[in-house]
Each structure stands twice: as C-alpha cells, then as structure tokens.
Image (cartoon, rainbow, N blue to C red):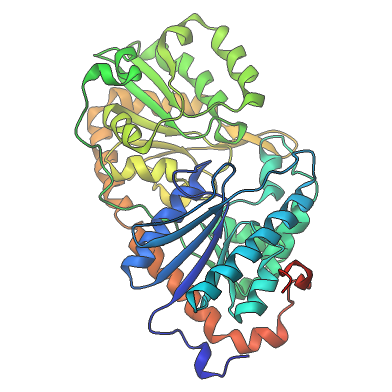
Length: 435
C-alpha cells in the first residue's frame, strides 16, 4: 500500500478510463460524454488512457492527447450478460496490465463507466493500488420499468455492486444520485453529482451544397422544423411525439417533424402503427436516420424547436446540445432534464404521467401545446433560445472535468481508509494473465 503522502493527488494525474463506447464508436450519450471528459482532462493537465470495448475495432491510437485502446472479442451472443462481462473483463485486465508495464507507469485513478469492466476493476485496483471511481449514466433498475421493459438477467446485481463497492461514485444528475441510493444501497457520502458538459465551440461547419445531404432536399423550404435527435427507442418517448404531432399540425400546418436517429428494431412496429394511421404524418414527418455530429449541428441550425419527450433521461445531452446552439427546447419534466431546463426561462417542461404500473410517459396534450406555443410565438421562442444558451454556458466540459477531478482528489485522499473499511470487489485474481 502507498504511504499517506503517496495517496495525495499527484501534480499530474494519470487517469485510466474504462468504457463501452467512444467516438467514432457511438451508441448513445455515454460516448459523447467520454470524449468531452477525456479531452477536457487533457486540457487540464492530466494524462488519459481510455480502454474501450468496441465490437469490430482493435487498435491503439492517440487523438486530442488521449491514448485510446479499442478492443473487441468474438463472442457468442447467446451467452448471459454476466458471462460476457467476465470475458470482456479478462481481456481488459490483460490489456491494461500489459499497456502500463510497457509504459513503465501506472494509473492514479481507475474511472469506470456504468457496469463496464465490473469484474476487472477489483483486480485492477489491487494491481495498480489505485482507487476506483464509477460514473453512473444509467440504471436498469428502476429505469427500465418506466417504459415497460425489464433489465437483462444479472444486470441489477451487477449495478448493486457497482454502486456499493466503488471508492467514489459520480451520478450525472441529482435524480440519478437518488436512484443509486434508494434502489442500490449506495453510500450517500460517497456519491457526488457531476452534471455532464458540452464544449461551447460545437457549431455547424460551413454549409455544404444542398444536394450533398439527402435530408436537405426533403424538408420544405418554408417549413418550421420540429427536431428530435437521439436513439429512437421506447425510453425516448418518440411515440408520444408522433401522437402530439397530429394536434400540432392541425394548428401549425407548415410544421415539419424531423426525427434524426436510428430506430430500434423492437420499436419500429409501434412507430409504424402511429405513422401509417394518419396521412398528415406521412406527409410531414421525416425519419432521416442517425446523423454524424457535423450534420446534426446543421439540423439544429435548421430547427425552430428541439423536443426531448423522454420517459426518463439520466442527464440529457439531447437538450443541452440544442440549448448550446440557441435552439428553443421542450423537454419532459423528469430526471436530469428537470435539472437542466428551467421552466419558462431556458425551455419548456412537460409533465410526465403514469400509464399503468410503473410505466410512464409525457402528457401528449401538454407536449402538443408547448410546441404550438413556441412555433406561433416568436417572442417566446427568442426568449427561450437566449435563456437556453445562457443556461447551457454553465454546463461546459471544462467545468465537468474540474468537478470530476475534485472527486478523484477525494478518492485518493481517502484511499488508506477505504482500503481497510469499504467493502471490496470480490476477488478476481483468477482473471489476471498468467506469467
């Protein structure tokens, strides 16, 4: 074990990030967050190594000062979650130990994200004598129940270990912090809220020719665009947005709905049923698929309003990004969205209501009314755009990194105490590569 002096934050922190995605391998907001955090930590004088499990990718690259190690395994998808995570963790452990041995150094902090690598972090903590910080971006229990789903077998138990056994836990909103405490027994003294951040320089690049991008030709020139950007899954409330669109188009016939994101196969039938039942939706709704960030910025520049009707949102990059660009935002009053958006000042918030059991969803009438207000009241739209831009300026990647470093410092200073008093991860020494 290190001496008392050794657990003080070193002048230059070396941070090991463990995650299941990082650009260009993106699934949702976690990858966006990780790139924002890693590059901000580098700007603040940290050395950052990120190990990312990305199917089909196997490379070691340096980008924006971050050392990125992408790795993959050829796994049978019929395996259970726990077995898959053990195999991924075994490979992760082998790669990290070899990497730092080759560098002749060691990480000061092991920063894991959600339950990725949960079976490896205990062995890594002992190998490098470094504290484990875990950021919670999502909790299957209870969030899955909010939109009528159930967690994969074994995942709730993994999330309990993640919340209870890390030296420090970061929650991306106060709402997520409370869920970790209430549902997973996390120690309130070891859970800190650090809101996500976005680099303020993100903006549309020079506009390419109109015929270079298909969606540009499909949006009527004089349309008032209502934009949704994100994964099109049950949690995001896109079915409620389509239902609200019927009422919006009756009042604002020149409105045009653009949904940018990949439609999950299990959700496609639900959306198709709504879309095909109303001719007006066939004419005034465009599914343009998942877009790169450069094109997403252009979509925001074209939008009159951005709508985030999520059933639940741990934080809400889908709201922060348009706010950063000065686009009026309408969001569900739930989770991190209710902390990010100030009602009537930096956006409009729509109530979420029960749909039976624990399932819930945005109030469709209120969602439609909010869109009609923004689309028909230019003064309101301008005030919300300005307020949103000012509010978003508080949520920068540099502020996020600075507050994350405060958590690192807390974990390091408490290292001696937590080594003897905190519950440790189960012994996974068998995962270590053989000599």
